[in-house]
Amino acid sequence: MCVYFYPRILGLGYLAVFAAGLSALAIPRVLSTGIDRTLDSGNESRGVESLITLGIILALLGIARGFFQGAQMFMGENLAQRISYKIRNDYFEKLMHLSFAFHDKQGTGSLMSLATADVEGVRQFINMGVIRSVFILVMLFGSGTAMLLVDVELALLTMAFVPFLVFRGVHTSRQLRKMWTRVQELTADMVSAIQENLTGARVVKAFAAEEHERSKFNERSFAVTEQTYLAERTWARNFAMMDFGFMLAMAVILWFGGNRVIDGRTIVDGQVVYTALSPGELASFFVYLSMMVMPVRMMGRIVNIFSRAAASGDRLFEILDAESPVQEETEAAFLENVRGHVEFKDLSFSYDGYEPALRNINVDVPVGTLVALVGRPGSGKTTFAHLLPRFYDPTSGTITIDGRDIRDFTLASLRASVGIVQQDVFIHTATIRDNVAFGDLAADDGRIHETMSIAQLHNFIEELPAGYQTVVGERGVGLSGGQKQRLSIARTILMDPPILILDDSMSSVDVHTERLIQRTLEAVVSSRTTFVISNRFNTIALADMILVFKDGEIAQSGTHEELVSVEGEYKELYDSQMRPAEEARRNAERLLASNGHGEEPVPELDASGGVG
Image 1 (cartoon, rainbow, N blue to C red):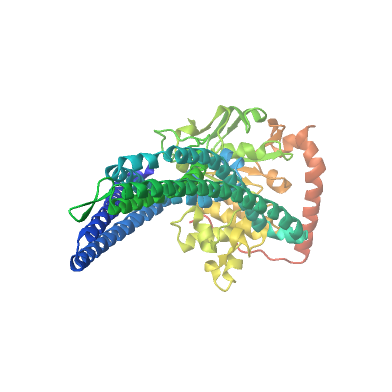
Image 2: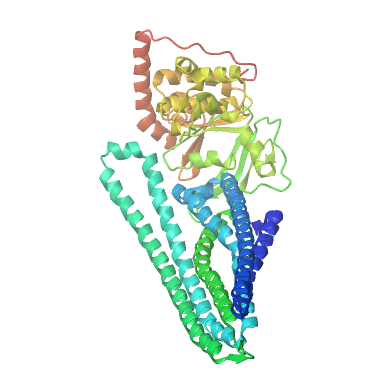
């Protein structure tokens, strides 16, 4: 258990627990002695002296008890905060290392709920349960033992109520664990609704769907409220039953104990003698009984907190113990000096283990080849590209780079060598410079500016009041779709990877900007192996190799001239989609040329095609 990572805090906490317990248990004993001595003193002055002495001792014990209880609570919260900090960090690190296959099946809101509400549930239990529960046990057994020493018969009478209370606690714990598990699940659904609506706020407003979304959220919010109410009501009912049990025990003790004091009262030589039970002993017995009431009441609360923490812990450790389908070998090598020869051998892949997304893929891509991946939506193009950086692992077959299986390399070095510009562009809430440098945190301003010029975005950024220090909002708010896509291109080019994947990376770019980017990218991709997913003819036609995907298989391969000259999937796509689009593009280019539209100057590149 992670509490053992902090033995010093745990040890100090337990030391404070025992010190606080001993201080508390000494109070009834002192009280008993003081009452009996005062009653037996025989004169007023001696009685006053006894009371003063009693008051001083009780005050000192109260101060000691308060100090050690404060220390115990401090240590408990200290330990709880450290452990929750560690769990949150471990949880986040785990999420960062789990593959695409895991994230495909998980809702963002549910994962967010785990990092907040569930970690908080565990923190509360660490605070209340790990250290304070020991204090409760010390008080429970200490007060029970003290009652036995005072009067065995009354103590046994009191203990008769304990089995009932224990049964109630265990039974309620089982009920609450199921209830709190359901609360956490419903909370995750509610957080998912918030996250989806915040992310898609523009879509909701565009379709005037605020009332519909509000109604959906109300349903989920009410479900959380209702289930939480049921759990709290169950706990409150158990607490009331336990409280009633102790009140009944106190009434019984008062009856039998009072009679024992009265029946055992005799006068010997003019002094009162108690043969069975003295008033001071009865008073101390009641104080010990109240001390036992406190831990049993707290046990009811701890049962509630433990049930919630157990439900949260199950959900958290389900993620923390999850095994990523993509595993790095123990002795994986660092991938370096990559030439860029990529080969797919007898490769097949399935997302669910049943329906194949790719099958029987055999492709040999020489160094420096520009490969275009073409096909209808869902044909397997993006899946094929995502297997190269090991976002997923193939179900069967191998992928090699320069003759070595990619599973032999560390994931970090592999992904540093395989740059990818994804269709779904993500921009962080940070400055434009920080977003571009995300691919290479050590990059200087000169390299960043040259890279942004390649992406045809440098002049736009320079015109902004804060330039590269301009902060873009969440997911790139403040930038157009084309600008975000160009920033993503620059971010990947800055890495200068020997293998490059462009997943429909210019789908949001206008014709004129695409033409400018295309010219500069030709020099960039000429020296590296590049895979391009596109439906634009002017990009596909430049490819050295075109792979045509259909139903998860490579239906055709070859150059544009070879494929367009024969009947098949490629020619069908070209005739139905690419030819009309190309004719429209050419018309647009003629119009731009007739208007004398200038071009942004293209930066010079070094001999390798990378940025200087």
